[in-house]
Length: 468
Image 1 (cartoon, helix red, strand yellow):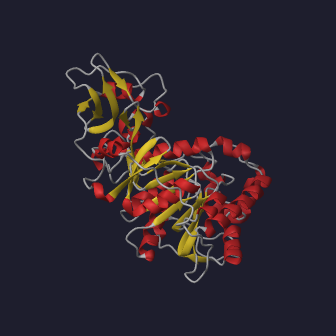
Image 2: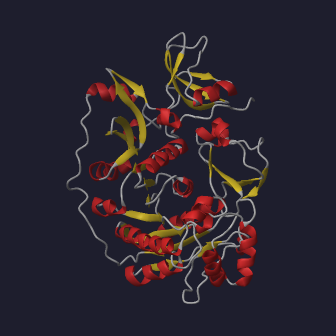
Image 3: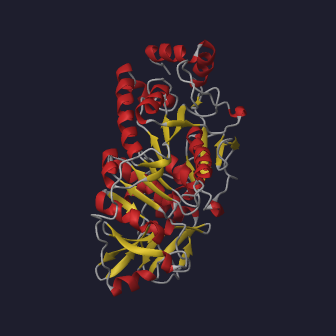
């Protein structure tokens, strides 16, 4: 791997000769492989077939692997039993736990402003107080679709996925306890994993990224409630995108840096600049076991005023549902407590929204581009309803609604590839197919075959798969 000369010179000057020597050597090594389990889907969490290599110290759900297995051909990967994530990025779960304690609230509203593909969103979900609401946003539509898929597989019910720019959130009237800005950056911390990041890097690119990051943070600060926290994160090393931007936030936004307790044995470094001594957290290959990451936390003072909009005005009125629609969908409602949920139509899908978060969801439906919200239940197909695949993955689903049939490993892979199945002695109609007791998704059994209802855009496209 040939690193740009200018990058090497700049980074050596920033880190010093000793640190640079350690990191330069580490950048020539193979990147680590790590996964993070889903705490709500532990029944499918099995590591017997993996060669594990220790726990990720700052994330209780994270584990290192000695080598990268074929996740594509593991059905448990597709139903969200675990998430493949770079270990340094898991640090956000450690941060969220401490911020939740500082806010002392039973449930929080959180926005991940630049969320795709969803690693940090799902890590935060695992650490948030139960019942909290997460908005996950991505401005680029293709990436937003991937974000929605990954959050669906994780299965947390209180999520709204949007496809908007930060400025749109300024006008929405929504306000959040915590906003994560994992901002687009020059990608220096990913050089070891992504050769494309090396090709794209330049000093001009660093400057452009630094300016864009400030624009995103300005919008994020306006939707942060007084007393709330902004988490700023990059996967780069240089000071322009890191310490310099944090100092700018202090000076221009009156932001107050907030310390996070860490273990010195983790190897996390602090500020690398002489003119900034505030708390920040640098993950450097060779010092921490993972890729490059920078993170800092800033608080909006409780007395600091923010822009306020009357959220109760100009909200799009929710669709009125017929008695037939309510009755047809009620059998799919969730948590065995129908009174705790309300029905909403999100695009062409009928979805269940937890009653506590109906106002925020209605604001989003009226003012933002919402891809999905709550628990997708079903959509109309003629005069009937076709159940939505995402309901299968939700941890808030009602059990016992559909008949189930167990598949072999080969059949499970065939299902994930979108192939039809033949299910002998199975009841007709919609039913669930399972692998090792875990639900993979829906089929519609018509007798001579079972039509595959696995989402087309999610299907495994590789032609070959290993036997098991």
